[in-house]
Length: 183
Image (cartoon, rainbow, N blue to C red; front, top):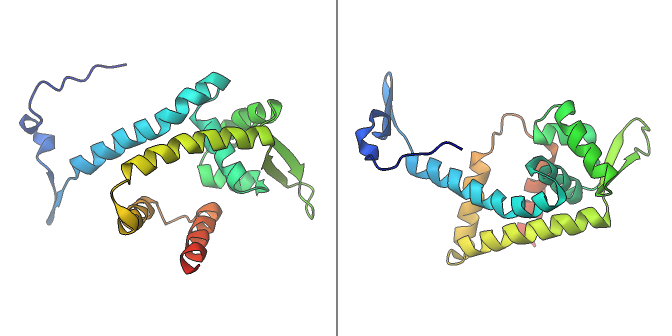
């Protein structure tokens, strides 16, 4: 791992001025938010990483088992779209989760060529443990924000998601949020 030397003043670096000229306009760079997102992501996934290591799993395993658990019967093709990874990348991870009994694969009822994925009880227990760790971190971070603050966080995170290629699962998440809001 490379060492980062923070001893020099960041303001001494020309790229840290906070502005970037793009011809006719100047864009003010958001170093504060960029770095907060890096560190928040590191710690958010780090909580789960420690548990995953005990099983010989990594972040790819976490993402796969998470979405399979949350969307039972998810097609392999849809999982590839959601994760935006190649078949080869998914293949190794999925095989390991199948072989170790965290996920089962079934043929589609109408199209037997479809491969539908389901979490087993063992997979559900792992996902619940990981989600508990991450929920604790989220709850701690949002402790003083109240309902309006939580809505702002959700809006910000939704705004960060690339909407050019809407995922079926992402669409389902938004539909679930809308239904919950109406209740």
